Image (cartoon, rainbow, N blue to C red; front, side, top):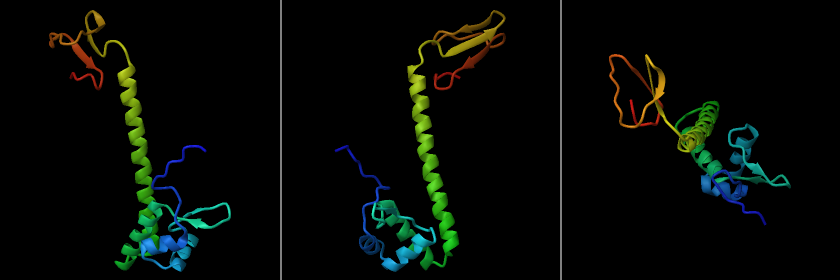
Length: 143
């Protein structure tokens, strides 16, 4: 069997368990699913299965609702939280890719442009700033 790892989005809880964990009635969970507020996963037979993230969302919906926030406003907040999570994950992926690219790039990272043209600069060498312009590569530690 393939290695299957559980995360916060893995749907595992039946509706009765999700209702107990969230402190809401199962009918409330069904209603939230119908209106698209908190949408659980489904088994091949069509039964609802809630993830840990769904349980957190249900608790948040209950808290916000008790504070008088409307269901459409709650839906918008949940959508923004999902978008934020996705964007943060993407930023982390891009940051890791950039770091890997920088680490795998051989050669000189600092160059100088002057009357002789563009030349590579050895680490630690200083230029006469009155006649030369220093270009640096982000992450080179210079500049």
